[in-house]
Image 1 (tube, rainbow, N blue to C red):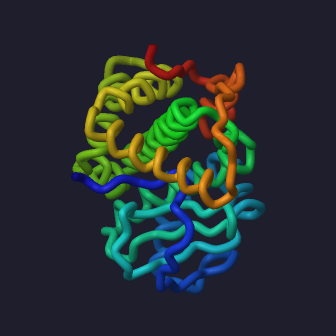
Image 2: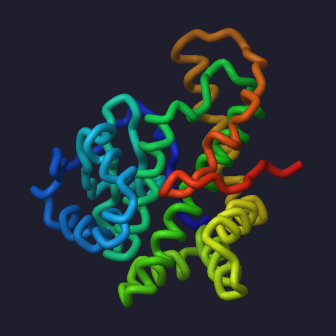
Length: 243
């Protein structure tokens, strides 16, 4: 199975890692990734706000990860695999910064949701983070910096999303139009849905067991998708889960 990017890690297994606190310049690979992303990050102040307010450290680990990166809400750390290529390092970093922003905005799923609704929320968070990575990679490619774009285009669990975003823009669609197409594309890959459903359900059951929670059946709150789906400049883009 192709490797996924985690929205929320499963806590409990310590990973060997080296971390860079703000301004994240003590690890050359992290500093280089942020420098490569600077042309688009500078365009969207929300990303700098995330780095300033919501990320306590960006870490590299040599350990094998089920995911190539994750955001850890309990510590506010982003953890990335040190084995990533430079382009994929940029892509995964943006993806996890988006998860940090989602968490800061309060749109991450509550543990009192029904398990199916919890998994639906995870799907949506992942789709939105993938849209963000693809959008920024597309903008970087337009400046001549195509490393991140090629990393996504060659990644089995992201390539179809990138292709659909690119096709929508090539056909004259706006970034908002392309974001909606890319969000919908996330759900079309059966392998991707299966991987995230298993991970989401495992995390949900682990949390129930760890916190001795009784079964819950709350539904996703009304307006969840409208709150979640916003471009990095704050513009809303239409999105919804599958019927």
